[in-house]
Image 1 (spheres, rainbow, N blue to C red):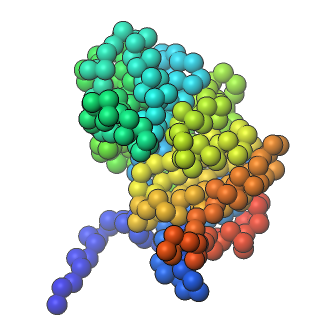
Image 2 (cartoon, rainbow, N blue to C red):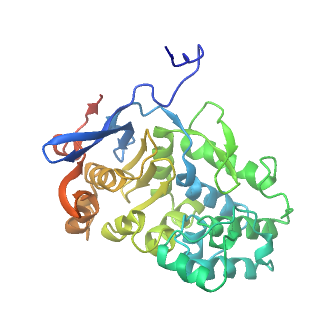
Image 3 (cartoon, rainbow, N blue to C red):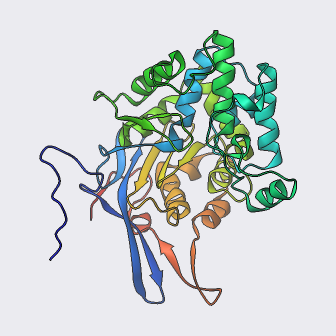
Length: 349
């Protein structure tokens, strides 16, 4: 007999208190489910929808990038909106993204060899093919975090900091990032610190703290670093993700929305009103993400935003399950029909 090891006393697991986020329906049967944690905050900051535990401690992964960009601006970074959006991006590696990363480095007097993020191919399949046909392999500039790393280097140049050690958690830039994360999330417990997939330091947050940070950025005074990042992402969604990406499609569908996807099933965003959300899919899967994103945007009041495209949100939230190439089911969000926007509710498995 094989037994799973029991958790150590006093330790917490991200699985603790998880609720049902999405069902995968094939034919008439629920074939699979995705568990996790989710919170939607009203403009007042009060939760209007929770699934699982909003206080769950998670690594926000690339959903942290907008906060990192705030720290960069406060430290002296100066970029036009489209490049500031790229600094907060997990981009596709399309030509516009790679050209943008080069532009950031060129303006700082740096070359591609200064980048220390993980070499990779572009995420966008046609761009990856073209990149390889041009004789390239995995390179830092093609990796989805190259905009952030280029901006981190440009920040170091602007502030007079060492560029060779910019990924060190003790570097002035990374200490500035940690200060911003603590300030905007309002989390009181010291964060866990590790290394993200791209090589930069990564700090943990509570899920509710992550949503709170996005809300504060969405409602920050005009001209502040927080407002600049939110506005840049909203105005240039193609730089944040790219062709075929749900993060880009969502911001195109809802004027003023700024949101950011992250690895391992994390997402966060906020509307101009300050209504905000964050969720974590427990198994890290991306499959339910578009359906969840559309549902939480509706719960947060996205359709009340002037110019919001209900049809585009419907399309975003439609995730078919295929059989022989034809739709035979869907990814369904159980709470979507039961909870009206603005109605306080708590849903648990």
